[in-house]
Image 1 (cartoon, rainbow, N blue to C red):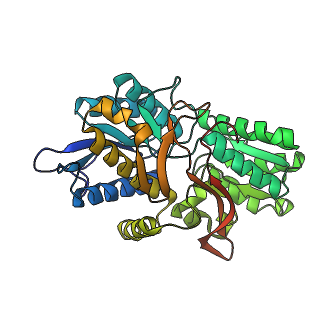
Image 2 (cartoon, rainbow, N blue to C red):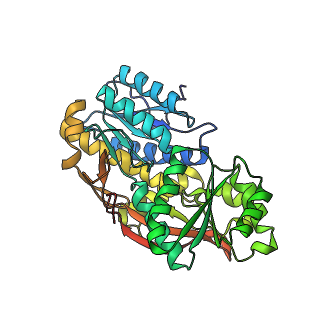
Image 3 (cartoon, rainbow, N blue to C red):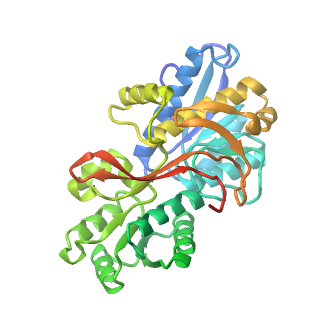
Length: 379
């Protein structure tokens, strides 16, 4: 479970340090590319905090653990990190894994700032210990559903794997689209080959197919099958969970991976801090940073402020969620309670629907800006 020490600026100090446990998917079946970007953001922010004097003069140290998209492994990592005396937890990308970590953190009384997971119900009951930066799924996916309706799509198929996260997404889409004349057709990728998915799309007269599946499998074979079927030439392929955000998507699919709209959590323009961090992240990653890298940076920026105000005392850190006000890379971050959301939520996270430009798949087009999220369970 252990990972190598983090690079200079984020790793162990020679003397006492304030330690933050970082939960990141770094090996498969985790989404490794997302984990790499998340960790880059966490580490860059930790370096910046330390260069600015740390936490009241004490260095900040990241203690990184690989969750590998495994909920049980994540829960065990939370137990281990709590025993090691970390002041708080940060990170995670996969929603189901974040839910396991949040549940365990709540039980242990360990503050956890979730970076990127969007599942509404991160904990079964409201908790004072957990806060989140990413917009809840119920808000972001409704923005996506409105984009589909605005683009003229009312018969929408979802190719889905079995997962709490995908099932939640399907339910959100269906509940939002049905009153507006939309129909959601569920296709089980566990039972259908990519070719059979194509036949089902034709039989149901779907005009859009949403990929609620993992990457690269079965997402890539399904995209190739649909793109290669001339009978489906006018069909929109979408991926609300953000699979096309990362370079391997374009590498595996080339031109077939363009014009696949997805959700990302960036503003229309980055401010001075965001622009500076973007440059530093690009140097660190060797490629354009994803929104997940910015989420990682903002996570540490927020936790550093919470720790400065409350010290390393866990209860005081958790009590600071509603008082924290931090200028992040994507806007000013404040937390509040929202109906139907069990954790402290950044209610103004930016939301966009974006795709890769068919004329230049390395470039992104903003198709719809959802504005700042309400953070609640209703628009």
